[in-house]
Image 1: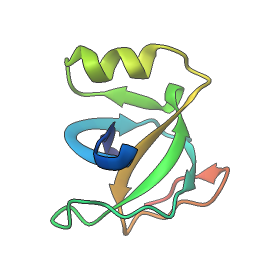
Image 2 (image 1 turned 120 degrees about the horizontal axis):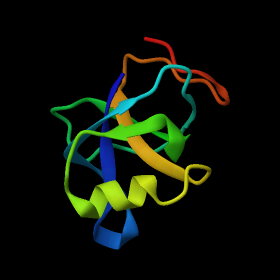
Image 3 (image 1 turned 135 degrees about the horizontal axis):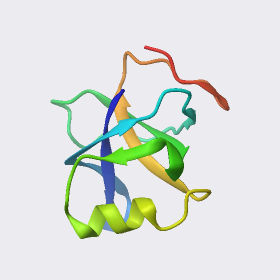
Length: 92
């Protein structure tokens, strides 16, 4: 499943970037009640373990953050039509 990485921005809020990644099959996530700043993409935020995220960018800012520690969590953004239940497999 395609997702977008996050960056911390204004007032320390997390925002979706244009940097894409893939969520591995079997990824478990938790939906967050956050609003996407980019209405064109129609995204929602989820928290997943880093080990489920494969970055598609070579920007060290994102790649180093993802591969740093597999058991830590990262916030990514997925299309709103994707289903995500807490600690359940993500479904399309």
